Image 1: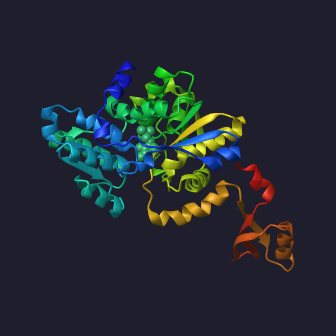
Image 2: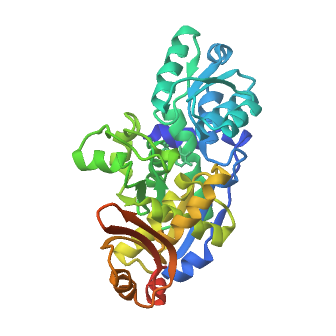
Image 3: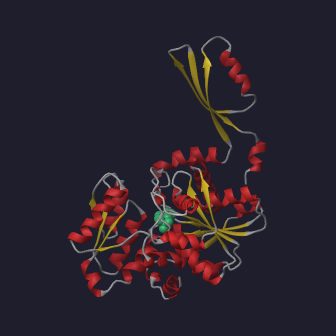
Length: 382
Ligand SMILES: *Cc1c(COP(=O)(O)O)cnc(C)c1O
């Protein structure tokens, strides 16, 4: 893919994108016995890397294309990247967002100069409508990942990494449609084929994992929406053949592990990543644990930080589960004297963190109880 390498080396994305810092994560490093760095895409002005791809694409349009204006569909980070890039270049942008998009995200896109059209219940509906507008109003469609220019824009991260930390052993990259990983991995393998590229996906939206396993792209019947930045049904048509060649492995993580990684990132660099933004860090932790990695130089991308403030309560609660500091037990017991006491005895000396007791009509009781786990388990976490 010489094309991607050349496009990166002649890029104009720094008109608008920052060459973001690579922060050492001291606590994660100490706990795991490795040297761990986090690539700070949360520091971009739109708090995600998406403006790199959007600007690379839009800045490369011909004069005639630019005069038509651009259209994109997105519920989140791509929308902001396109709106900002287009405004900067004096090009009009129309962004189709699902009706359910939070007002805060709609406002952000409007403030960046994008014209928002609310349409459909889900991202897929917005996508279809944006493709209609492309035809009807003769606009240029800007795809969030399935486009060589967009992929090359995301790949500019790789050039920065090689300069910032040439000693890397492995890079952990979140995967949605696959543009970010296809771009970074292609550039890295071209200059340093010894560096390993590990993709990370949520267990409930494993698009690249399933495609590699089946040897072809698979449309997932359902995808989890927790890490909304990577909630895609199918890996890209353009990105998959590239990823297949340059990605070494894919790790899957649970939503609780993502929440625990959000906390780790906060503790190390005082940034609050969105779930997709913390995905790579969650994968890095899991990979170290599963493969007993020591003394390696590892990098995870913090890909975004656009999280609604009101979700933080939920994330903080789940983080303890992901770290295995806490376990939730659900049990049904007979509603008769002594049985609750017996249940409590089973909990031994564990501290109770949460408790719920509910009668059911058939002389039984349903109990949900959260218990703190021992220091021993805590120490094993890293
Ligand atoms: C878009 C996005 C991703 C995934 O990028 P793809 O190119 O679709 O694989 C990961 N994290 C965040 C925060 C994103 O916005």
